[in-house]
Image (cartoon, rainbow, N blue to C red; front, side):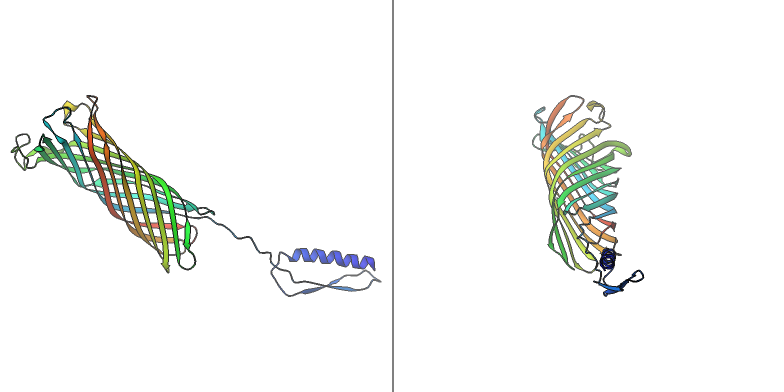
Length: 351
């Protein structure tokens, strides 16, 4: 009898152990085979059950490609009055305006299980069109020269990387996620100006010529200017979903520390030495704003469209004439760019 119950108990334990990995079902009865002369025994086992898995904290990340059409302006002025008191304050002002940019970029956003996220993008392309207005002043701000040049190229490049934390303000069918971040932005614009046409001035065209006079043919390259901005970003991203398949994303960042270095090359000014003739350096501030609407084509593919505006301004700095090793005051240096974009995103986890 003891042998019979021992065999029955052993068989019951084996069957119960294997049943834990099966789906839940009704109780089963098993008849234990008994050797000749033994007493038949029937054992009823409890229904097996599924062991629940622990909750997952799966990362959420996306990658995409974007096209950005934009129009920008860069202007700066210098003062050389401390070197020559007959010159104005400012002495020279250059304005690069209506510079149209066409750029392609790649972007990403990745969130780990602890709601820490990283996001960023990198892009590049070309500038097309625009103008340069070059003004020079005597003391008392008497304008003695004012010329117009055409901008024909050259390039626009930029990159941004941010690190932050997502706060889920609303979860469910509707979602609101607020993500403060800190990051870095690099932004470079290179413009090449051709020709020089005289504009009206205060001295009757004594230095340039009458208004409309082509002082330098537009087939001749006269100035190349490359502005570089490196900035700290402090801001926040807001991601919202209230409608089926439609999301809104807003991104705002202050640039509390923005550093600019600018290489200014005057190709026809042999008296200034080899290009770049002047290098400008300064510090300031700025801000960057972005808003986008996205539509889910599938659980993974999205189409988006939005607007973007960048502004940076350096109010403290100097301009160095490299050939003479001479520095003068950089009064103000500012860049801005505004445009619209469209993109496509592959999302590896649903929003």
